[in-house]
Length: 230
Image (cartoon, rainbow, N blue to C red; front, top):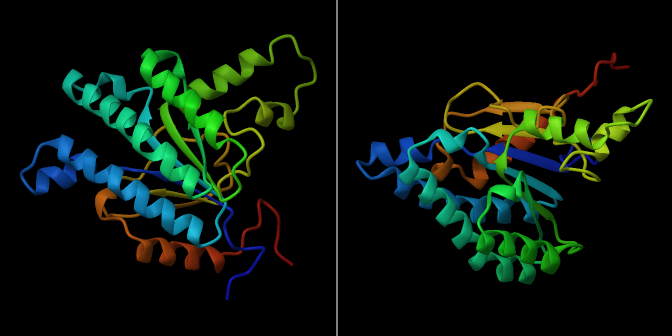
């Protein structure tokens, strides 16, 4: 049974394993990234159809600029293509799209698409899809601290309100696909009390069935947030 108290309102995912998915099939890494984009659509539909209001996906980190130039260029092109294709789709599904990260590195066309996504989907009530692109948790915290410079008596609420995720609930669940066991500079502040699931499945193969298993496990978890359960 779904429990209101224990059912997640926000799921975050580190989408790992695209390159290895392609390598296993003797294909270029770019093919794996393209398959990973298809999985975004599938999992977003699964999350929102289950009544979960927020989905945050880690697509491109501030450290990913260090990858080979051809791969970086390909990822940027996929991101641009995704925005062009999916802004009208998300509008039709009543989904708000946010791009979280340092957008100053984007070219003019990409920045225009990011602004279009915000303007056309902001306030839509069917769910919130956050895509973290050129995002790093430490960089986000530095940005937040700088924005609060000169303010005295800073509270946790002040810091939360200075993050990209202002006004959103912290993720109840953080999933990392691909078999690695680290959070890789993702939502460092927001995930303080998230339930973290590391799964071996490579991102292009991640399914709604596996999502349901994680949600079921989460729903049975006694979340105490540092306190003692009664």
